[in-house]
Image (tube, rainbow, N blue to C red; front, side):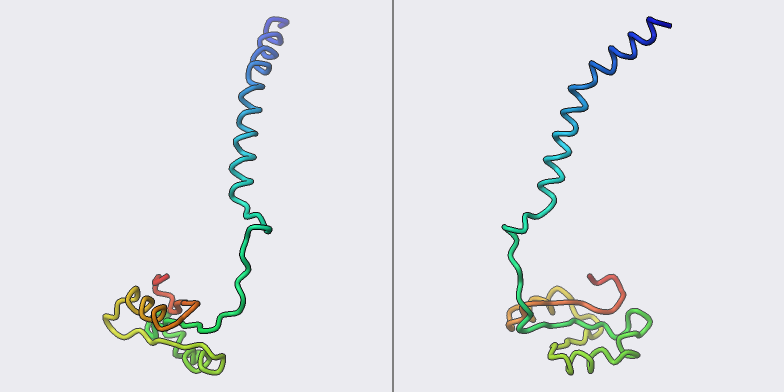
Amino acid sequence: MMFARARGCLRFLLSMPLIGRSLSITQVVVSSAVPDPRRTAVAGPARHPVLLVNPRAGDGKAQRFRLVEQCRTRGIESVVIQGEDDLSELARKAISGGADVVGAAGGDGSQ
């Protein structure tokens, strides 16, 4: 019985450096994953937002909720995706046209 306790204590003592090392590594990983607020840029409001809208996706919610009209009233340019349009190309065109924020709506996994 005494031998088992001594062996358990020995295992614990031998594992201490490994536990300490793993805690140090965890601290480095966590601290690098959390952005430093002093080094994080804050973006102002969008000046030219663009929303790519797939009217057929999401069971037609974009049409039911009149998403294009909602965009217009909020000063957001909407681009309705047609048939075989290339989503990446539409986003590139929006950016080259001055968009500073591009979003996608539809519910088809486009994002």
